[in-house]
Amino acid sequence: MIIGYVVGSATTQEANVLLEKKVRSGYYVTLEYDDEKVLGLVTLITTGSPLVDDSLNDIELIQRIKQMGNKIPIYMKAKVKLLCKLDGKLSQPDLPPVAGTPVRLATNEELSTIFSEGTIRIGKLIGSDVEVRIRVNALTRHLAILAATGSGKSNTVAVLSSRLSEVFGSVLIFDYHGEYYESDIKNLNDIEPKINPLNLTPDEFATLLEIRENATIQYRILRRAFKSFLEETREKLKNGNVNYNELNINFRNLILKKVDEVSKNEKRKDSKDEVINKIEDFLDRYSEIIDFTAGDVVDKIKIGKVNVINLSSLDEDAIDAIVSHYLRKILTSRKENKMKRKIGLRFPVLVVIEEAHVLLSKDSNTLTKHWAGRIAREGRKFGVGLIIVSQRPKGIDENILSQMTNKIILKMVEPSDKKYVLETSDNLSEDIVEGLSALDTGEAVIVGNIVRMPAIVKIDKFEGKLAGSDPNLIEEWKRAKEEIEEHSDVLNWGE
Ligand SMILES: Nc1ncnc2c1ncn2[C@@H]1O[C@H](COP(=O)(O)OP(=O)(O)OP(=O)(O)O)[C@@H](O)[C@H]1O
Image (cartoon, rainbow, N blue to C red; front, top):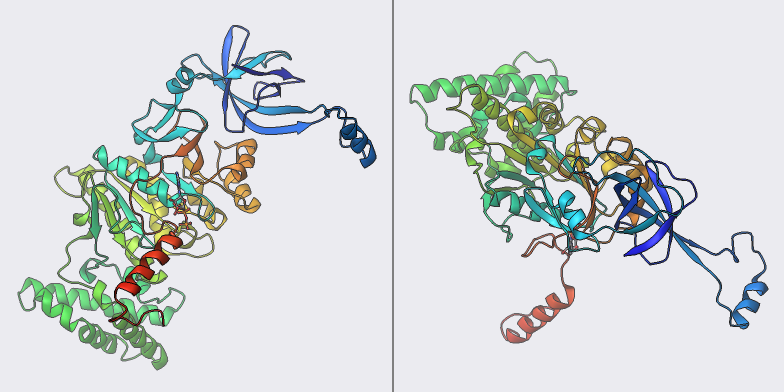
């Protein structure tokens, strides 16, 4: 169906089309010229009038035209980004279309050959029934899921991770807000956030305690105490002089005794006291995550599962320590397996890091940022892919964001976020980024190697409960009212 004709000047990248049919940005069109078929993407729709243009300043003129019952002539134009020739190789157009070239909506067959060739379905092209399937192998070049709050990031994570698990993929979600834990995600494997101190580095332990490297004396005391504790404990375990449950019970006293020993000659008594306070405070708050009986964190990750660690009860520092610990162990273990097939983590893993603007912040040196940076650079060779999720892309470290070859960008309005995303992507163009504000909930631009061409997609709705979904207030009030009335003799709710 012809929707319009090319007008004015055009390039091999872009053309302007005078429309005779209504279309919306995000639709795909086909232009046939010079014996070629070229696929285009509508990126912007504008309207205007040859009679009533911007130069008109006399409101009475319009009123008189309207009173005479004459329709004001208007036109609608589309800016079309020329994507590729429909020649199988998807090569760039050699020549621009000339004025008068007819433009029609791309057919489902034309679109399916480009967008439906991947491994797992993620949704459908906007305004069409053409399903979009992404190429899973390209996820080792990492993925960023970016959007303003409430635009559909969690829904996308849930759909993507469920479907990856159905092709035996292994996904590990660091569930910052407890949205995926105990959700209806298929093949769910809930993992308790437990850490075995025997597997921790001194840096990770210091981070757990919120002792920063720039607190040099505290940091030195803690490192020495923790290293001495590890050496002594390993010796005792080897000789059978202690067991793991005793360590769980006595850890506080053992580590405080070590702090005492290593800080005997410290002049700064206040530093030692600060270290003791931090250990006491941490163990008061989080003793449940310390567990000497817990095995290696990597052993908890299952193949063909959506592995979810619920971090919602922890604060940022504890989350940073746990996430970085997992990232370090996963990368190291995959390297071991690459070197000697029989040991280490025997399958690739895709790791979802939510709140990436916090854990991978450009303004702070979290341990997670260090290890995520390592995986962003080295992970591809070892089958470790990052999927970072954020509603504040401008807060993400640019070295990491620029390594996210693939992007799923849902509605984004904030100009500085859009600018930052454009600057850190070499496969996004200004006109596509400009169109992000016009996306509805669940609609996304997908770019990178996971698709053959930029895809404007309505992501499938996750069928099932997610803890983070917007609550249905009316339903919840109705249910609560019924419960109160039912139990009014027993419960005095709502008084
Ligand atoms: N593809 C979709 N189709 C239909 N509804 C959707 C889609 N994606 C999200 N929604 C709905 O929009 C609401 C917000 O979705 P979601 O929680 O995924 O957004 P979010 O970006 O993760 O929000 P937040 O930043 O608050 O975590 C939910 O009610 C969800 O059901």
